[in-house]
Image 1 (cartoon, rainbow, N blue to C red):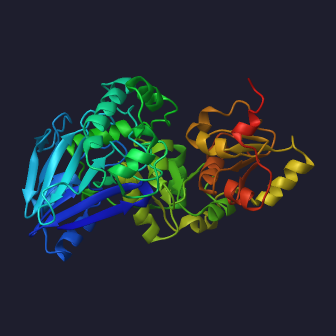
Image 2: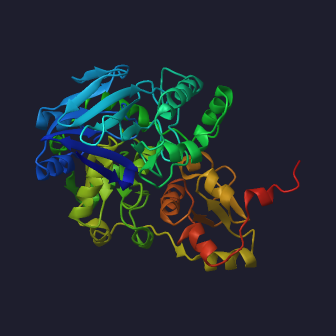
Image 3: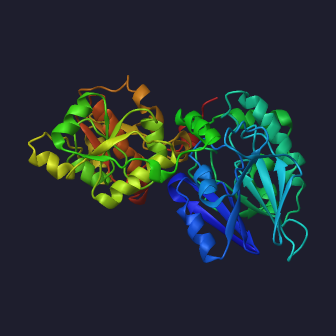
Length: 468
């Protein structure tokens, strides 16, 4: 049989194409579906089945477009509440094609409709050699249980305990594990960067699979969960009915600087997608900076949301199109246009530019040593990153909560912002500028650069030493 994993780094999303004897199935497709069509054609396969391990909340699926273009049937868990034409599946249901057999397991916990898929290649053995675990079981982690509007996190965590212990952990140790997400996904707390594992490895090394009572498991699962982005609820609704094809979305219109200024004043969000250094050197005042590298779409969904009209600032036509597709992957489609000619056209039109100074960690260290109270140092990483090490005088203000956590910062004093590597901090500077802070600096290279230079840092256990 043919087995291929597709990994979309910007969303930490894994999807799969499996084929045998000319027939193929796609599992958990991303919104832009050309990759599956092209790969199936290359392998001489016809896509006849599309399976969703659950109705995803963190991205918009391409199941509807893929079904229209191939005539394939869509399969989802019977509890999904899907409104698109589909086959509802339950425990023990099977899809057979060629020498391949897919057997479904209902595994509620991350969501009420979650399913896993046992994969057998009858040419190899009648027994399953792999399990596609969706968001139920990740590498080193399990799915968060707090994304349902109809069930409490505690209820879903209890279901997840049963799904793991009564179904997945009953599988032989040699069965390979292929999840729907990797490191960086908001569907888990601390997912490994590895993209495959085995039941045996997870049984040994995954903290959530260690022997523990149901009560202890629930307590661990509902504690310290990352913030739940509001766009998650909207994406799940989109996936229930199926999203329109990308080709049906109108291209963003070219807007002259004066028109951008007018629409910005009327409430449109100007989203600058350029690298941090270029944004810092000059940008449209009031714009939000999210560099196209990294988890661009997830941060756009978290910080901007799906509703507000957006005007893009990009370096060229290629990055403009890439930005449009990435936004559509999380359901952001309300693009009013883009700044024609970019920032250079804005400047030539006599429009004012805003700037964010870029400083090195050595310059920051000098400022802290010379005048510790002279600069407000803001760390916009997540709490686990902070606990592993942080700068002594920093204040932890995770990026996704930054706008609501500014009361203890003075508008009159300079603010230096850092993250782990420099992407999130540049976004944070744009939010601070939008909140009225004028003396804002971005720390290039972030905490990674600070540590690489051997500069002093504090670990949480050190900071708490002696505290009873």
